[in-house]
Image 1 (spheres, rainbow, N blue to C red):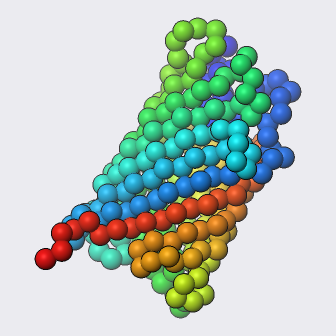
Image 2 (cartoon, rainbow, N blue to C red; image 1 turned 90 degrees about the vertical axis):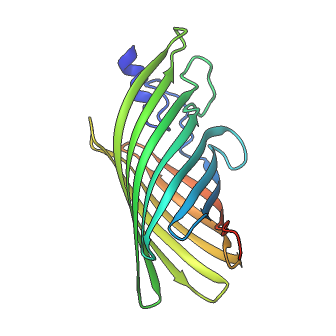
Length: 231
């Protein structure tokens, strides 16, 4: 039974029973990202994501992430951070299924940027140590597991005007134990600069797992204020 419960740790796997997985539904991710500059070399990462199986309903996941960014130079950033993730992996909300996975995550990240012509490239490398607790409906205790994962994201941004831009990325997730492939995310979006340090992106994400795919609409708000005291 424990092995069956732990197999549900992939975020959107439901159970071995013939339950509706929600694969045919268009879900939505509502997202906020911030890089808050506090000195010439340091900034604070802030992030919150609310993910739904359906466009505006049927809760799937809450993700909160923060970290300290060290700006090596204008094209390289190193980050050490923490994330908390609360997941309901059951699309149908069946009380007889696992309905809660909580995770505390430590991550290390390195970002490199460069420009080729009009195209802005970003390479993001991330390592994650994941401390996961799975609710056991047959016991007052939780099944616990520690996983390690590597991620690589290649992002391409194309400015159209001073206000509008296009954004694309592909990100692969690799498990460092058990089966190597975890998931792949392919993303495309149109963005609008609201101010010099903020923008909104409206996009589409194809989230591919070994045996299932999800289509997700994404609305992202990016805000990068300079919190240094002005002289």
